[in-house]
Image: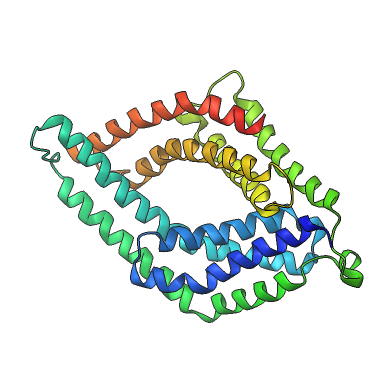
Length: 284
């Protein structure tokens, strides 16, 4: 088996181990528990999808479906967590700008209380999901999958896919991100109308990042490319925060909401200016 194929299997094994151990941190409400667990699930789903032509098809499809469900529950909890923290920081910034003593705008306390309640509600849903039989069955199937993931024709006699076939799938992930990026050549990244396309770009860049991560040290330069993709995804994430905050605050016309949206707009515009060069460097 090629070093690249072994590296991919090791990468999957590491994510499955996180799925097995991190629920304790989620239950304790450790700051990064939900984030890290969701990241493990997303890494698995993205890379199984990337390498799918090389895998046992029925098993891959089933795992993709189950990971979609698993990540969806954690995604709701993570979005609520991010919204609560982000709005808190934005309100603090708005308060410092309006009041030398840092007093927040009218309605801030009520807004934060509502977001904290949503954060805890979705975290409890995640707790129930993680403790359930379906999650445990998923971890068991993933454990089995990691030990023998490749198509029968590739796994025969202990052999996995050649290095060239692994790298071809990584290139496929890169090309998918580049296809979306080409749409921004003449229009830039700013603007609410572009938010859905920006989000697809970010998701594809993250998938390419995970593909490079899965290569580990088996391919020279893979770690550096993964880092560049991570930086690009992060700056696009700053812009996506504006979309998430707007969704969370939809229908709320309080002074606190207006202050948050104003602060978020400033951050999003700054991210849009920085993003062009960063994304271009990642995909070049």
